[in-house]
Amino acid sequence: NTRSSLSIPWLRFYAKKFLQKVMVENHPNGAILSSLLFGSPVPKHISTSIKRFGLSHLFAISGFHFNLITTLLALMIR
Image (tube, helix red, strand yellow):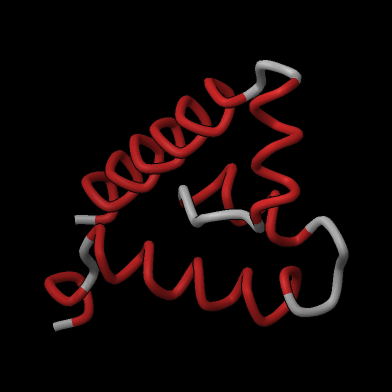
């Protein structure tokens, strides 16, 4: 059954895999986008700049909202 196989971890895994294939490997800001969407770690030099400018909260909040949206979508699909 396709519907029962759709779960939050499954959606997150394939969305992250797709993003890494399309964006992270081919774009200089892909690591930042991946961090905003999935909470993936960013390189140290980027992390230092983010902290210096006080933007760390954006990365935590964005990851939370992405997870919330995928949860709602999975519940609506069921």
